[in-house]
Image (cartoon, rainbow, N blue to C red):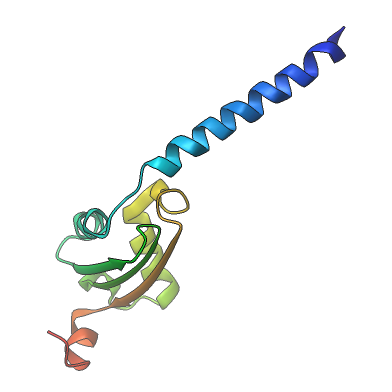
Length: 109
């Protein structure tokens, strides 16, 4: 008798998963929202975020919190500000993470 209900349970689970995916796909983030979220999560930082499709993003983030950190640690700090949006609303994020001193040394102001 249990075998009769298994296909229905699998179908229900798959449909529920597909519905959740469709709902997340409709909720997009724009560059300004991501920029504001990064700056709120890294006080004193500056961020510029660009995107052509609101799915793939490029960010330049200048933050004093990056001092003494390796590139991977810097990226982790940025990802932490965005939480679960990474991998959902944000499909891909390219990050250039610099300290204020590194930013100034590049001649960027």
